[in-house]
Image 1 (cartoon, rainbow, N blue to C red):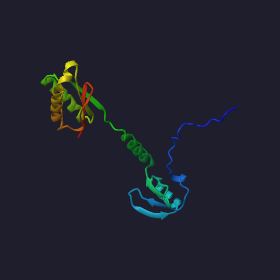
Image 2: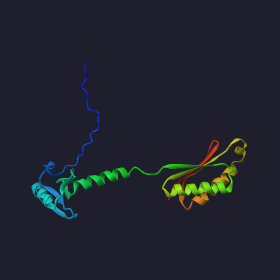
Image 3: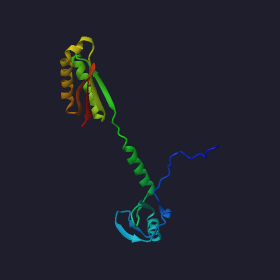
Image 4: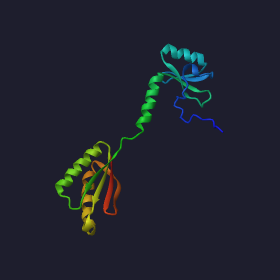
Amino acid sequence: MALARRNVQPETRDATRINQQIRITPIRVVSETGEQLGIIPTEQALERARDAGLDLVEVAPGERPPVCRIMDYGKFKYDKNKKKNSGASHTKTKEIRLRPKTGDEDIRTKIRQAEKFLEHKDKVQVSVLFRGREMAHIEEGRKVMEQVIEILSEHGKVETKPQQHGRRMICMIAPK
């Protein structure tokens, strides 16, 4: 027995009605400058949009009467798409790894690197790794971590306080 196939692809067509697609009359119209034109017949609103060289776009179809705006639809779609894509945040997580016995100049080098990450709006995960007998001297690692946090506090804020995870102490710093 054969089963009927359904189209499983999501619909990508824009649901916004423009110009002749708007069939309801009358409609509430907003001009290209944002001025309320009131409730007028759809044909009159279309004529007004054509005279301005713009489109009549339905912006609130759920209202009664529907609200339409005279605007450049191409620009409206572009701005809407740009807004949707800008929601995807740029923030990435970068990591700097240190050891309890890391030298002062090496720590400063890692801190300068972390400052660059924070300036580029990336989060920084500061990790202090312990090996072997260093686990007996966790306070040395904590001193290194506190030193790094203190210096980076002017470029970012501590998102998660230093926490011990097995052989690793982790702290997350977010950009200001």
